[in-house]
Length: 480
Image (cartoon, rainbow, N blue to C red; front, side, top):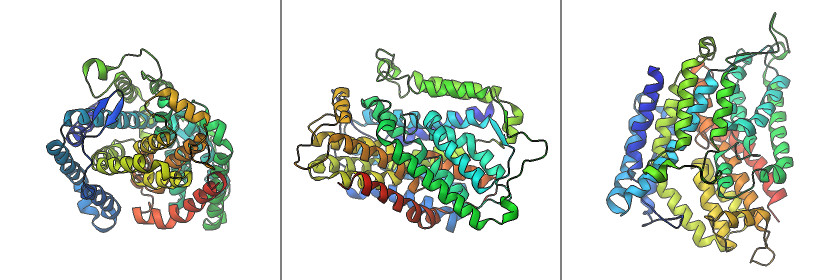
């Protein structure tokens, strides 16, 4: 229990300080910002990103011991500006605290629950085995989320490839399971869940995007298998069943029950269930029944988890601890950037084509949290069609597809698809594009695997592999 309580204490301590900065008021369900920040206030966010990229490479000892201080210091610097210069600081404090708690509680609970499930695969790693496993992970991501699928499969994936693991094995796992796989349901990725809460039908993405999703996932799986076959020696890639081993062996299967309850709790929201009690509104708290339930599930799962399963997974709290500290700083320092981007989207929505919505949403989702980026550009796109993103009926009409006021332009449904695809897919562009990316990286590093640095991730993998794929999707679907 002590590790669980220590992590909970760390989470709350690192949330409070950054959250002091943010200032906004809510009028009739619409967020109103009192003051646009100066452009120079984006500098702490840029500095934090550069240090995340360069720290492990150029000054690893300093970064390992002081990344928490760096993240919190930069977040606090931005926070002080908002606290001293913006009138309604308490309102924005609570709003940001709600967002951060929802984020960190969910991924922490998934991390703990999945850590108590030990999956052993009675096959040695091979191009075919790895390709099939990652395709299965992509499908699974739409049922338990990209974080849940990543935490369930990364350890068995690393184990079966223990003697033949290459950096690209880890990167393609992040591409397929931690990001692109979860593009078909609101459970898969946070931006899609926010769209669902706003009024986008649950099966909208499956109906509109299943074929391009299948093309994207299969393309990446085939490329992985080709690289695997080329770089690994024939003696190492031969498929073989371990003596006495079953094809799949599970320990801690009871945690699947916790996982199911955890996924169901995601939908305990007044926007989904009319009349569902909201602790935020009743007691002005920065968390609700959903977060309390997730925390309880995580504690219960940790206390009752199979000890052999935890030991077999080499479970510890270090990966989620690093994510919690770094994303606390990211949540704080990215607020000025998000405000400026949101204002730009509102001011220039009428002149932005669907192609620009796709690329702007995608590029910014790769370095910012993709959930608020999705909401900002969704609001801008709805405004272009004379609709309000705060009204469920308007978002539903937008998803159904209405004619553009601009002659020759595409319907609103195409804009929604472009924003949705870009926010999910481009999260794979960097380690910080999506929370599971960083967690997978940390878990792999703890096993002694060779993990690419932040720059290597970009120039060796995401830019040469993902950008051409994303360009093909754009050309076939949105360049019209």
